[in-house]
Length: 267
Image (tube, rainbow, N blue to C red; front, top):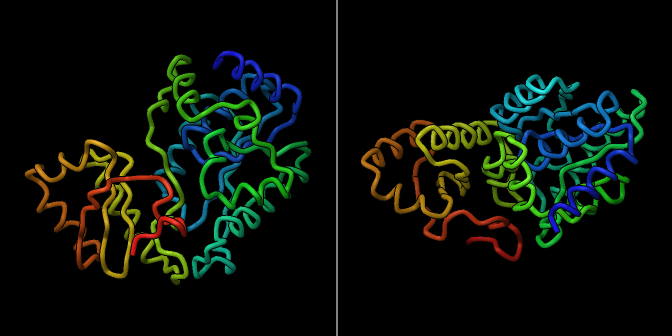
């Protein structure tokens, strides 16, 4: 079954031919870019957007990936869109519209026929208004079109020897902040620093959600007990307070996708 989806993906990419890949450096877009590069070679370019709400670590990893495989790569710097400064519920839709307008413009100016992104088959089952924006703009999503799920993408990446296959999922830093809250760059840097610290301490995929001066930590399954028993726990708390948080809490439900979506909003 997965093999048939993989073959379909290759067929889609070859048929599209000239591609600009929206490349975040995450598992899905990395797998898509790698396959696109194999399918159409010089007809591919990776486009990475750099904004204040994208972690610097992600940009560095995107650069390292394209350099390793010899893939053309362009970083596009975009200022914080004013339309999402207060983190509206439709933020993802508005953001995608704003950012992908820039990608489409670059593609047209440089004679790339299509812009594609790493949306997969699992993404259609959650609250993802950004997908509506992509569809309206004519952005193709070959992983979704071929029916590949996140689990299948990870497995294909592992089989093909791609080191990122087990990389934790990432999302832009705006997802750590409640809706209808003014976004301050200082807050974004605090989140980025806190999550980077926790990653270095052995907690990959951890989210630090911000509620005023409270940092609410969401760990991956199995890491909650590890953190509670960690002799460095007090040092971690102290470090997060030095970053700027007044209170540090551990969410006992752990990390779950969409925990800040309207129907899942934590009070």
